[in-house]
Image (cartoon, rainbow, N blue to C red; front, side, top):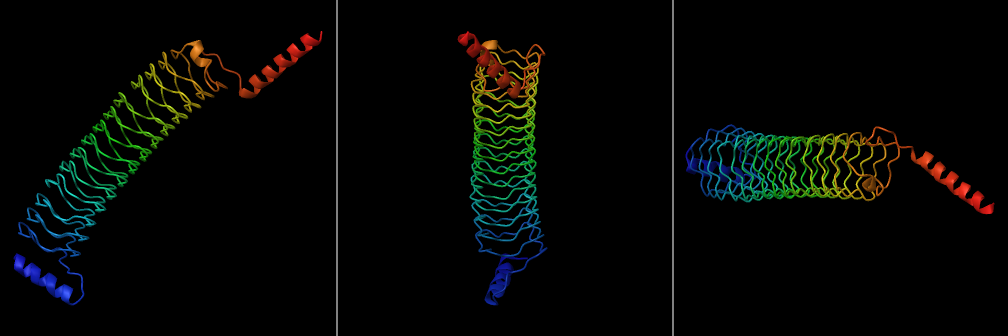
Length: 337
């Protein structure tokens, strides 16, 4: 189909107050540059290697369309619907795509660096090995997305939904994930160095083997997370929730664990040398064979029912309270006599 024929179809449909319908149309290698394609229905259309440079695709329906190797440079993709579309081989560097819908889309290896994808829907999308360097994904939906080995360095993911996403081997160094939802996400072997996870949700996430050098996890929810054998030296976990977390053989040298909730956490063989445990709650925690000094344990909020480094069991809080009351009563009696 020639561009002039396409324009005529669109004009005719709009003149009749209808949505231009080009479903399953073959537009492979077509030159559509600069055209006004707002609201057109291109679902399941073949747009491989087509030229859409500078086209207006505002709220255009491109669901399940084949856009492989298409030129979308400077196209208006604001609010476009690309659910299930094939965008492999497309270069989208620095594009503005706020509120775009890419649910289940194929974006394998696509260059999206420095693009604006705020509030975008990328749930269940395939972003494996994609370049997302410095991309803005503020409050975007990436739940259940495949982001394995992707480059997300310096990306803005504040408030984003990454629940259940596969981020194993991804580079998230210096990324901002504050307030993000990563519940059940796979971050195994990912590079999280200098990333900001403050106030984020990481419950049941897999962080085994992840690089967490200078990562900020202050106030994060890490309940039931797997951090076994991970290097967390000097990490900031102030006020974080690590209930029932797996921290076996984890390095926490000089870590900030002040006011941290470690109830029922497994810290067996963990290295807590010079870690700040002030007001941390370790009730029910397993500290068997952990490296930790007595003066550190004296600063914690609670050790009730905890297994101590020597394997002995700490008394319950109720028993400790009863013992303190009994000791106080004994001192009172001795004074009377």
